[in-house]
Image 1 (cartoon, rainbow, N blue to C red):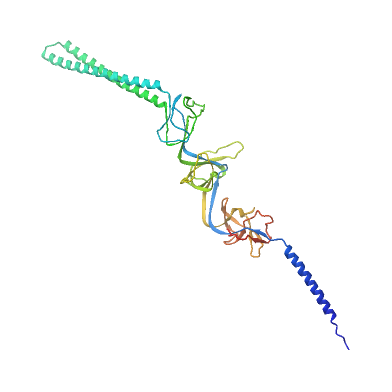
Image 2 (image 1 turned 60 degrees about the vertical axis):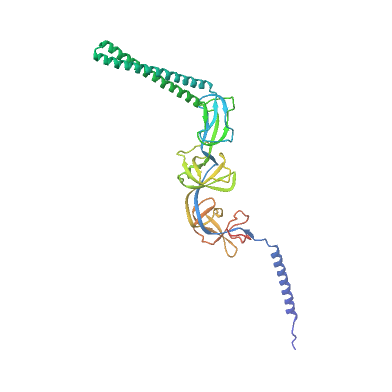
Amino acid sequence: MSVVQHGKPKKFMRYFMWLAGLALLVLSVWYFMRPDPLVVQLYSVERGLVEATVSNTRAGTVKACRRAKLAAAVGGQIEHLLVKKGQRVKHGQVLLELWNDDLRAQERLAQEQLGTAQTLAKQACLQADLAENEAERARKLRESGFISSEGLEQKISASKVSRAGCDAALSQIEQSRSRIAVARASLERMVLRAPFGGIVADISGELGEYATPSPPGIPTLPAIDLIDDSCMFVSAPIDEVDAANIRVGQVGRITLDAIKGKSFNGKVKRISPYVLELEKQARTVEVEVEFVGPPNDEILLVGYSADVEIVHESRANVLRIPTQTLLEGNRVLLFQDNGLLEERTVTTGLANWEQTEVTSGLKEGDRIVLSLDREGVKAGVHVQPEVNNSGK
């Protein structure tokens, strides 16, 4: 008679349950102790505008279209200072006047000499008219035989002399008028007028001081620095390598350090015809970019530091990615559906600091890593997309 043995299955089940519990425990420990997956910011590849741009190598400067450092044409003591710093003036307005009492006295003397010359001319011309009338009567008397030929010739000669005296007196009038014009021109040189409307930026002279114009080769401070703030532009140095891509009329963007978060439309108005070579610095070309519709709500001051970005080529509706997503060798990290990162080489076209055109290697809607600076982000790593990320 055989005996059924039940001990071995029970023992096996006990071991199996014990191993299963141990495995579950290990799995639970691993699950709760496992490292969190890397969280990365992704960007969905899209279509849009890409522009090829050129930027300045060093900070540019906001300048006025017209700025004049003014001084009187001659030296003299400042007698009247009629403006102040920051004052807005009109075209032709008197800014300062030098002491000119001596010149005014000369003008008055010339005026008096003109009056005297006019009186003498009137007298001389009346005498000439009288002498000519007498000569005409003498001619008639000679025809009647009442006077001799010698008497007629004397009358005619006397009339010619009188007429010459009249002409000489009239020329004295013109000379007097010329002396008045000279005196007034000298007076005008003692007055400094605004050649255009604008703002007085600086005044180097004071009332009673002696002002002199700059002699050749010896620069001196101007009496008044006048700025026309109705028209401004940015002068910026562009690297000689990029200068060949720039043309007059190209559009650009202007940003100012003093006005954060805003950019202004601009247009290239001038390209320097020579390369500027500065010691220990790259060779550059000065480019002037004018404001297209200058800011009305912002205070724009001459001397502000500025940067320009000039667009020399653009393409619309092309596949593009942020330039910062590119690794060396035109590689990107592509996010796959299983959460792993794949390294993908792409072919690029136009590019700037913000956007780069992709001609092959990606398609619209692909998601690539935007946050390449995070530690551990590389090909083959399992990552998790950042929560609440718009994908842009």
